Image 1 (cartoon, protein in one colour):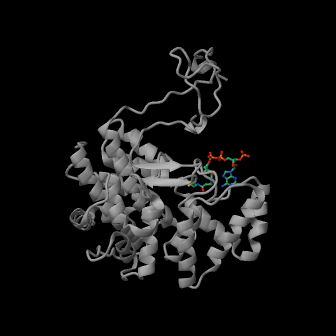
Image 2 (cartoon, helix red, strand yellow):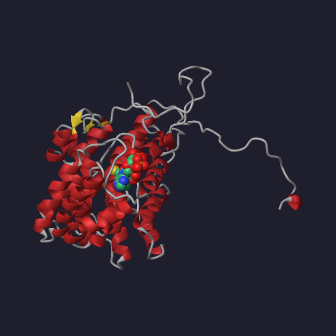
Image 3 (cartoon, helix red, strand yellow):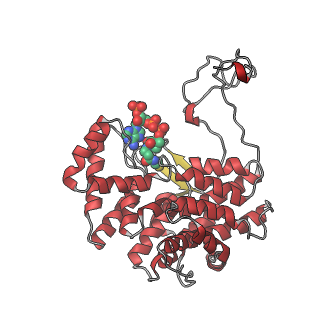
Amino acid sequence: MSVTAPMKSDAPTNSPSAKPAFVKGLAGVVAVQTEISSVDGPRSTLIYRGINMHELAERASYEEVTYLLLYGHLPNVTELGAFNERLVANRWIPAQIVDLFRSMPPDTVPMTALRTAISALSFYDPEIEDTSIEATERKAIRLIAQMPTLLAAYQRIRQRQEPIPPNAQLSHAANTLYMLDGRVPDPDFVAALNAYYVLLADHGMNASTFTARVVASTNADLHSAITSAMAALKGNLHGGANEATMRMLLEIGDVTHVDEYIDKMFAEKRKIMGFGHRIYKHNDPRARHLNYWAQRLGRKVNMPQFYEMSLLVETSVLRHREIYPNVDFYSASMLYYLGIPIDLFTPMFACSRIAGWSAHVIEQYKDNALIRPQSEYIGPTDLHYVPLAQRS
Ligand code: COA
């Protein structure tokens, strides 16, 4: 039996005369059929195109996973070579986008800057209004390749530095780090970021992917769908949770303050960022890989305290309630150890998830039906228009 939320009406939902049941937050509602990824809460598994994410997290490159998500199978050597070349060739962004970043108020939040830049890239894409599968695949490759360049360029500009051109010799993950400070990154840093990119590349019908599919279902173009997905990712109940987690760790400040801090959070009925999940109620399978990288990088950069604090937060939260770390919890300290500024954490998430968003837009186009649910009106129905002069 499928998991369904309690219905307000006793009438069965499949009866033609029945009013569709209201399900708050669409929890448990199956809105889409997909071959891209499977998220199994009770078994705590995540599968991309039939392959368990644990295998991919330990062995695959983000480039391979992106190909897998877009085309449905792992690339062979020739396919991967050609795909890599296309990604590398498309890393550049138009000078007008760099100027746009320069024109933004200096305190513009990076997620806001990037969401706007994705939308603005549509001015310069030669195939913007072509929503054929072929054109959308080409646009997806351009956007996936450009995303880290946007992120790094914005970061450099707000620090009053010149953007660093992409390095064609480096992988997607290595080039992301390179464009931030101009140094070829440590191999452990690259492996950690690659694993992060692989782990976050797709995740079933999460809020931003659903948003992208809703937009695609109206036959709008890929840039519109990705811009909307960026907007949905920004909130702290979704992609923004990684930033909120790191701010929490910094606020806790020391391993000796963890219990007191968590007790206070629960006493005030506040949510602990990086914990809980709509689907995984026991264990988010991605967390253990990020835990591994957070621990390893913490030692490497000689700042183990944030990882150690994270372990204690996990134990402390469990004293109050059975909720577990989600993907954002250990990715917070891991990204911090990579030297990524906290307000770039959610854009880093977007650099990965753009592969999944693009694959979902293409899948939606291939078998489209307008996504248009209903609402249950619960307001009054017997009021009347009162002329302005007579209103109190
Ligand atoms: N801290 C404290 N309590 C939490 C919690 C958290 N992080 N996550 C869930 N809970 C509690 C809720 O308060 C609720 O309690 P109640 O039954 O007493 O009302 C219960 O657990 C169910 O939570 P709910 O928010 O209804 O679950 P959901 O499936 O709608 O929400 C999240 C899932 C992810 C939105 C939620 O767990 C959350 O807000 N987490 C923090 C933000 C986060 O890390 N987001 C990233 C997700 S990958």
